[in-house]
Image 1 (cartoon, one colour):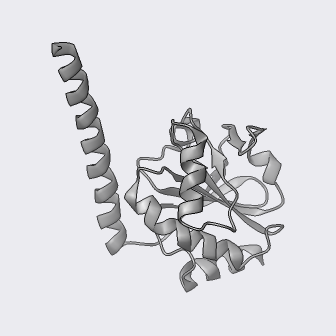
Image 2 (image 1 turned 60 degrees about the vertical axis):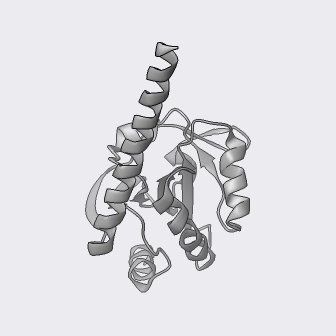
Length: 178
């Protein structure tokens, strides 16, 4: 019984830390919602599509991509997902594609149901249930978004949520595509 109470307390503490961390990212977003511009080689970790096909960034070479690391339990992730869907609608997927990569460790159906609940129709869903990408990309929290250019190099990132279909991001994408 003591072990069960300890385990429950530990799980509750972990969720509290996650909630606090996501909220602190959200609060910092309110004051600074600008891209961090840099350039380095893109991550090499693999991820899966909805059919469990293993993919990596090479599958998307020739396109500008926006990798969005998210989870169903992350409130700021939930808030920004509709704007990512609207952003994708503004661009041809042959030129620019958003890769929302779910980091949920539970069944894939949770993320799939999330997309249905939030009417996300323009985005394909991807999965990294082993959380390799956040470790390699040194993502400190969620949401964490990374722009990858047509050559597979990381060129910018944003830590925290955003209104992705705003003029700021649309202009950045158009400028990068030209």
